[in-house]
Length: 283
Ligand code: PMP
Image 1 (cartoon, rainbow, N blue to C red):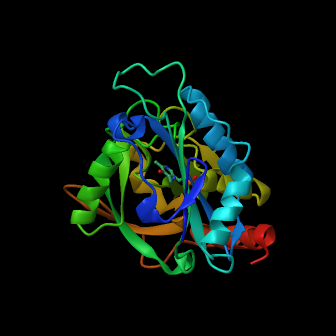
Image 2 (cartoon, rainbow, N blue to C red; image 1 turned 135 degrees about the vertical axis):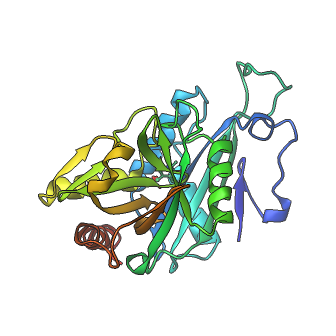
Image 3 (cartoon, helix red, strand yellow; image 1 turned 90 degrees about the vertical axis):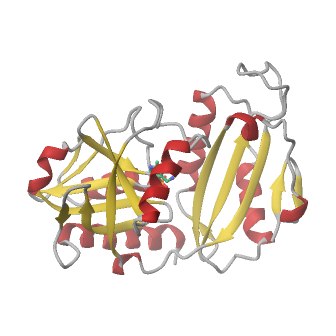
């Protein structure tokens, strides 16, 4: 398997960056993760559009016009044309003497590679998650590699045996450390609105469209923690998470249970999602 680094395809051991790379020194970089099913990319345009948005928001100059070709080559070189997996892309603000302000001119560092991952069987998962305080900054809409708050919270979750933590900011649920968050209340689906407090999840945006196209009531409104009593289903979404049903929500002082079986709205959306993957990738 090969990794792409600044114009070259290298063995992972041979791919090296400078200690003065701003991605290393400051976490001054942007990333993206794009799934493929049997080697066929899913929602590529949407992911590249979000990458462009993130780069623009932090004024990181990088020409990504050749990224689609590079992505295809990454899958090819990793010999994953028949496998499920994802592309990891990272762009950092290159190498410069260490100053907080960024240099006017620089060569962005571009890293890209394809890896194999399991995208099957999400329909059978029914997981417990733990709640945590949302300690992130106020630009969660940017897919920044600076992920300290996410990794600290998720490590706590992992220590407790949980796959994911879902976060609360000012009394409202926002999202997971690496997933979007949905609730079902009175047959209506709720998810936090896009804006500064969540990442505009590509899977999230697809689910909203699927709801609208299939007469499932969807409201983009943050759910207050106080309204949890009325919630009947919870699920998280993401590129590799896909749509994972949540069975129990663990608070420091209580556990909120969402039934012994995956809820009907969650199931329906999982079905619609799988059909969409099939329609778009042919697998
Ligand atoms: N929120 C956060 C904080 C994430 O890291 C991710 C995973 N990239 C998501 C939501 C889900 O986004 P997507 O569906 O685009 O993978």
